[in-house]
Amino acid sequence: SSGIRFDSRYSYFTPTIRGISTTNYLPGNPSNVALYLDGFNSPALASSNFELMNIESIQVLKGPQGTLFGRNTTAGAVQINTAPPSHNTKVTLEAGYGSYNAQRYPVYATTGLSDDIAVDVAARYAKGDGWVKNIFTGDNNAGRYRNFNVRVGLLYEPNDIFSVLLRYEHAYRNDPTNSLMNVYVLNG
Image (cartoon, rainbow, N blue to C red):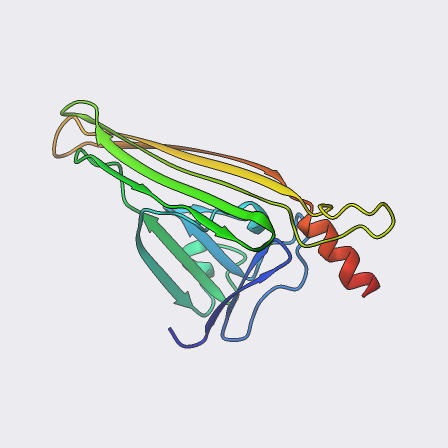
């Protein structure tokens, strides 16, 4: 789509629509581009999980969207919709390895528990040694990180008229990359 960029600054996701973005990433200063995951606003760009393995659609709404989405949509809004849990069993596994012992292991699984209930789980584990060397202590792994997130869903459909989808997401980050990048930018 023309006029949109998805950049990353430090550990933050920084969307830009038609040249409008955010340069202040502190808590309480949300982006000018609102991000909605399954209809819910995701104001904390640093904690957003963008390695979802069950994306159904992505919609980009350009220009001010205050009428439909409220504040913090000066540049526009991005809606990411994931597939609901399915009764058809499906499992997707990936593995990745890169420089500095960087490893990532995402997984997505969905299945039906009964005629009325289906569940899914999306998880991601990532770790690595980082690329920073602390020249004061000699630690070659000062940027070592370990991150984990999981997102589970439960779909209850007793009939064709009524359905309930419950989601839970949890993230754990032990990643000094953001702090190290800030030090590098300030002193570099």
